Image (cartoon, rainbow, N blue to C red; front, top):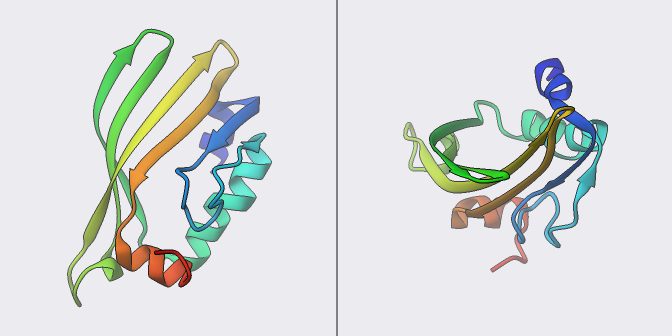
Length: 119
């Protein structure tokens, strides 16, 4: 995580998709420490083997759009891996990554495991 923290602006605003189990309302986490504590530490503790695989990068002027997949071996049938599609919008400045907004289609199994009341 030191690499991530070193690549972001100290005032970064990071938003996960609405309905994300870690911030269902889509509220921004501000600052690298908030992102690490509220997202990455929880992912590491709750999802052994969680991965994100960037796919295509699209130049959209002041924003870079990244299409990616995230996954975990336990999201599919036993001994398989299922993935959720992600679209991430990134904004940069000389100081590093300034905003990150994720839009994604979460897998139903992820939603039910992390937030049973989410339908």
